[in-house]
Image (cartoon, rainbow, N blue to C red; front, side, top):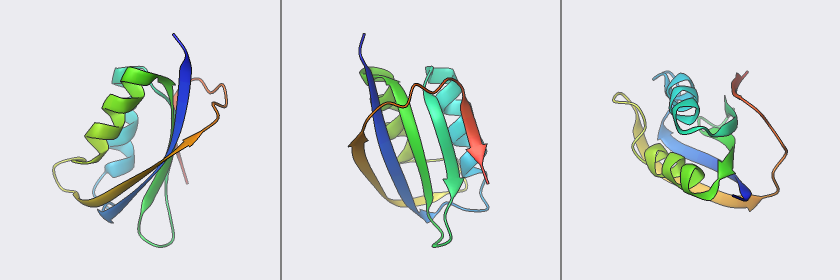
Length: 91
């Protein structure tokens, strides 16, 4: 199965609500590699890669986020896979 990659940016109340840790947990559960980090503007950005179905499911989940988050928007851009393994929270 071909590997796809997506760069995502999530806006809303997504910092200080365990969004990054939750994203890491869900990505690992789905078998998606990549990273996630907070941005100075209050958004969260990340890189997701894996099989198309798993990446699409991860993106769907980002629209809801963890229980204490309030997601306003999720932007998604197609990017080239980086060959990442594992999923990390970046600072």
